[in-house]
Image (cartoon, rainbow, N blue to C red; front, side):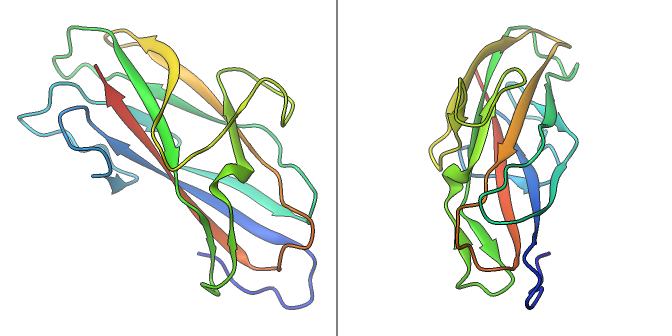
Length: 163
């Protein structure tokens, strides 16, 4: 999904959203698809399925990108929580990477580095419950570190339902 842009000073940045229902072990997910099976205790959906941060130069910060986490009407009777986690940004040239924590998130519009959370490889509660058929927005921003090699980078963000 990422491509080398040569001497151009911008990078294309795309995040793919993965979903994990509560009954599944953490880390099991299918990119862009909610896994809802007959043994699921509760499920979660997220839209859109990808975030496109566009082309950014080193030290630039993206615009606010929003996903809506929804508890679909699949028989869930209780409020659920949700956790978010991510992986390292990886370029088409696999040696080009960016730390997972360059992506920040919050429950409302924010200024990067103020009142937000750095994304982590460890699932972190969003700090809000989602009732049956309810939803909650999560806002994401990305800042490119200075001196970052030009490439097309991809990151996976996982949304996990938790009781």
